[in-house]
Image (cartoon, rainbow, N blue to C red):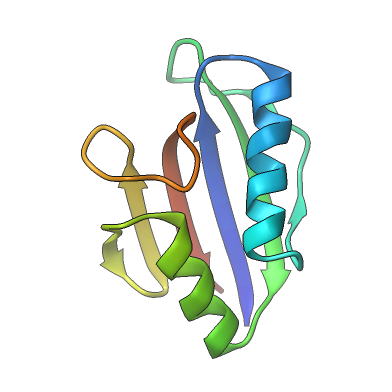
Length: 99
């Protein structure tokens, strides 16, 4: 299945984005990531996207490690860092979708 992840990082720092991407690669190395860009609706945030073809076990493993309380269904879920525990302290928001 084609999986997509959208990640918003704060503060606006390219080095932190690279740290977050490396942390994600440790969780699931199959993801390929877009270059980062400024997040248009949030101050001091950068965002990037990732895609990978994953099987059910890989998806379950990935979801179990990126956040402790994802909101939504397995094929379309998200979380904000202000009320959950992210895999990296600088991740403000994460969304996961299966297409």
